[in-house]
Image (cartoon, rainbow, N blue to C red; front, side, top):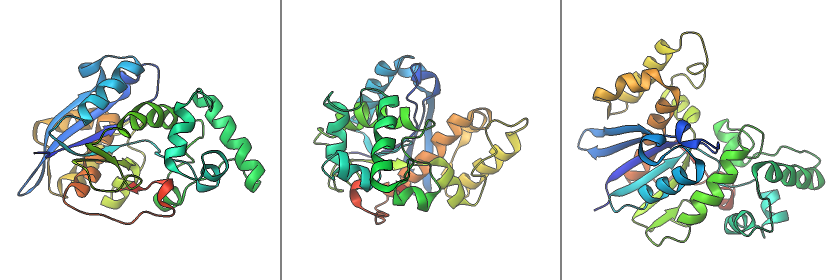
Length: 265
């Protein structure tokens, strides 16, 4: 029976295994209990292709119920209409076919050119980005995650009968794969959305974020020091909180067109 929940702080870097962190939890009568927290390198290696393939294999294991992945799943509707037939599946095909963008830079260039022609603005955001305070999906900070996450991870999962990328593929599957955004999750919890990463002394702020997660019926136990010591690990904890909320049957409506996707908190 599918029961385990995964939260993933994702990376599209060439050595993605060093930056990807995964938290695994199980639902209990008292909330979520953290079972494992590990860096991608520890499980699958450092290079992007290997670690992304290993992550897909883990997601499709029989014991996984919900997965929260921290990268943009789609584009603003104006770009989907112009480049992808108006659909999320068309966006995946655009990246996977070889006839569209072939790397993060060309994705960003194509999106910015199309956006400027269609709207006069180069960097567009989805409705869910506005609601959750997230960035444009193809800026310099997000484009690698969007390109490799959609092409290599969601593109593979799309064809797996046991998984559904929500909300675009519906909710009727053994494993649900959802977009999450740790900053939005921490904001929902009422703690630090930012300022717990690259600052001189972030430990106290991380401790407050961990405490807020624990107050949301999550048992951290021996993994506390890992979350206090590494902000990517802490982001995977936020991701598992949001994925866990979907595991309990919560089905919040998408913000904006379903084809744009939705950030779940």
